[in-house]
Image 1 (cartoon, rainbow, N blue to C red):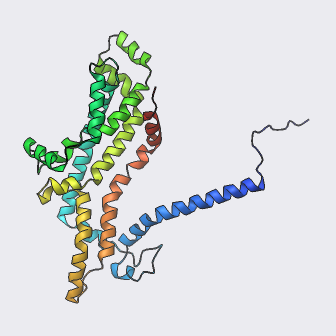
Image 2: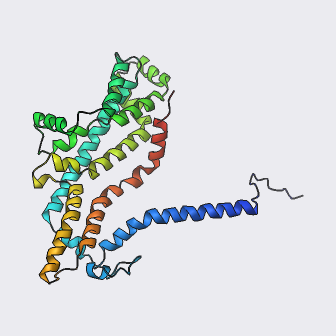
Image 3: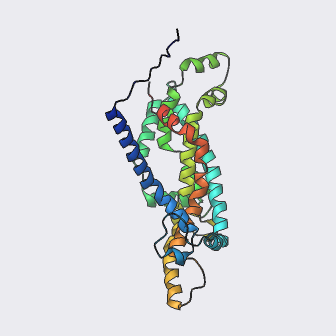
Length: 300
């Protein structure tokens, strides 16, 4: 006799199949509505500006060209802006991750003297701030205005992730830390050799958020920096979008078109150039993203 295969699959009714199809249709529609604007910006950046102005190109570039990128990246200020943004992203993210992990781990230990008071100060400081003017005065007193350190030092401690880190580190079994302590390991050695290796999801999530924040930040480049050589890519993108309109008006008033770029293609190219590098980080940290957020939300 032939043995019948036993499966746990529940047969679907016609109504459930129709429901699944409807859910897939809705999800695909939502995906199209969210993804298409990004795709439209990309095809605009590779299009001839004046051919794209016809408004009949929605899925393929109009007269594909690299002139938009060539004109934008030929400017030295963009090359220098990439260097500044790369510096603040790499150095700022490393310092933020290091300091945030150290502070959150220390505050997560119950044996910390005045631990409750320190945790209250973290929560209080996260919701209450002195404002922009006192913060500007503080930066001037520290002497870091118009320097690269104005991008790094004020962002070294992320208070929100300190709170998440406290909850995350408390979820680590205390027996693991106590056994290492009985073996004679110091607190720093416990943190580096035991706690950090099991905290990869939290560290990866913190790294991703910090890097995105550093790369996309432009207000600090507006308020705290005067030198054009220390502007960031995000600031250049905003400046390019604002200035391209007046430049296009001046070109049209002259009655002569000498390039293939327009306001739309210039803006689209600036957006792609500024967002593409940081988007390349997501595939490497995506697998830790949800896990890190969920584990950080667990409380004993």
